[in-house]
Image (cartoon, rainbow, N blue to C red):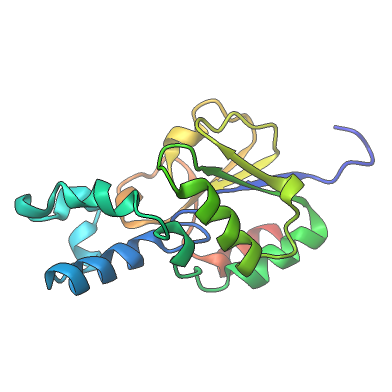
Length: 178
């Protein structure tokens, strides 16, 4: 590491900065009058708890224009990421290539909610092959080839995983990194 370089942090978007699950819960309640609670998801993916007659709708909704544009912001993320930005080189690393409108929606979302993050520090990708010192992500698949410090951001689907350093919220990220 160069003596003049700040440590680099790569931060995932979905279920870390943006509350994708809350949006799914709202969608299924409004469009299908189906109530889903976070407790139903303990250790499971969202698709696993959908009633069989709705299983095909998840992919449809995630491919709609605007889905990623209107996600709620995770509580505390804006303030903590702004503070991290002062201390570290912060990069947003999001798998934005899989869904048709994801890339544009995510860029617009970031520009609105995190305007202090430069476009030069946004990495939209498929696989997260990154040169960073710390990664904050909810998906352990992104840690497989990552050599730095791994912080697993708690999400219902990863509650049964105990092999990584965990952060449950942005207050805990601040305690560990600021």
